Image 1 (cartoon, rainbow, N blue to C red):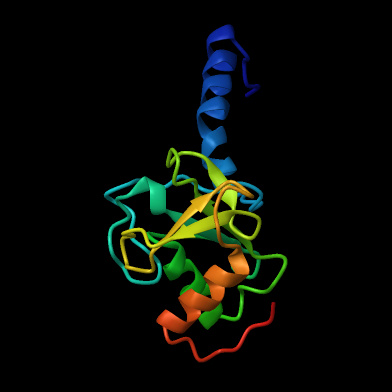
Image 2 (image 1 turned 180 degrees about the horizontal axis):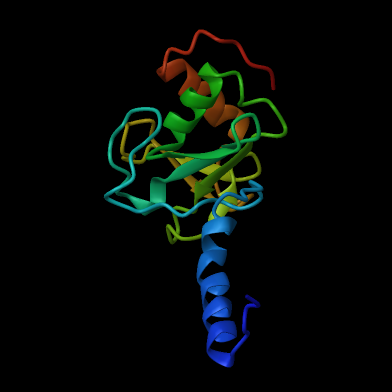
Length: 156
């Protein structure tokens, strides 16, 4: 028995295809942009605390797993990526939320930082656009690794 293509059947099929499109897109992660964080619901991949303070959020994308990892403090991101020997891999993308507005994502390696702030896990760093803070990422990384007692030496 031949299938009869009516306007209703074609329209219904188009609606199903369009509705399913976001489901297929979810599996396609390229890691070029930070992922969405659901504040007060998502937890830090390092310390398991809720990510609540937008101005201190951080995240990374690791090509090894194809996943984004979220953190409540740049220090947690440094500790987590250091423990897994990912921090110095150029393919590992690192982002920090700008302390200025909490909505702008900055490349963590290019950002500058101020210290002495009250951050969620006590690492004490606030990210700023390049050149606006007193510290560079190399300094923040070394300090955070020392505070987290990371025993894995990293380069750079």
